[in-house]
Amino acid sequence: MSYNGYTSLVVRTEDRIAWVTIDNPPVNTLDAVLAGDLKAFAERAAADEDLAVIVFQSANAEFFSAHADFEWSFDPSTLMALADPDGDPSLNPLQQLNERLRALPQVTIAKLRGHARAGGAELAMAADMRFAAAGRTWLSQPESLMGIFPGGGGTQYLNRLVGRARALEIVLGAEPFGTDLAERYGWINRAVPDEHLDAFVDALARRVAALPAGVAAAAKEALDAAEASGPVPNLAEEAAAHAKVYPAPDDVVDRLRVVMDHGGQTRDGELRLERLLEGVPWAHRS
Image: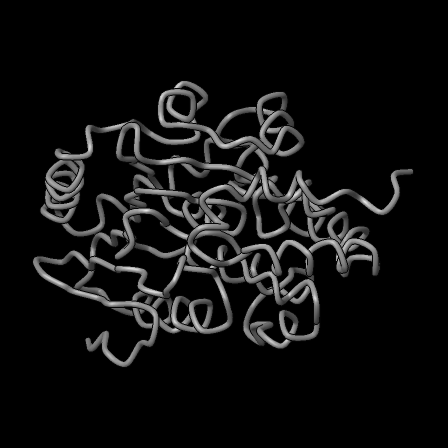
């Protein structure tokens, strides 16, 4: 099956493995282009019986994916225009996308370097496993500093990875987690020295791909069934709660415009995004 024709992805396949490299300069923002490419890739991959493992990685060592496009806060209709007609209509487009990725029959691995924030972290959490370059990777959910909270599946994925109390700390504290703490909390499977990360993930992917046909898919099915209510049962509730804060009120949108004017979605601004967000005062607090 051909995996050509993407604008923001480079896909290489070999030995039943697909390496999917995100390349959406300058900071791999999850925008309409990347979301469309990921959806198109997932549609093809879901029907590819010759593909056993998918590795998501980044062409940018500083950013796995910075976050979802801030422009969607200025014009929510541009996000809603991405709604998947074949997806659950009770979910928003980012939830639909991440669930499409999470439900792929292949074993999926996110290989992380640099910042994975907000929608970028949710994208990583949609994978079956996450391995990160030790000391060179930071995960965060800074949406509360934007007047919202993770709404692309983040609350549901986080809760199952780290537990409710730690998920609340991540969501409301909005601080970047380095690899030591992310590994201890269970946000990532493990931190691997940067110089060994590629070889480690490659070896794991090849071991899984070499398993007899059907073994990995059956194991995923059984492990999902171990959660009594299903693997991710409350996305509709997340969507309903998120609708209380998005689309955002005018004062929140205006504040985000200031953030954009001071470097949002540029390399320099994104390297200090949490501090940049905190430096712009709220118009009011209630």
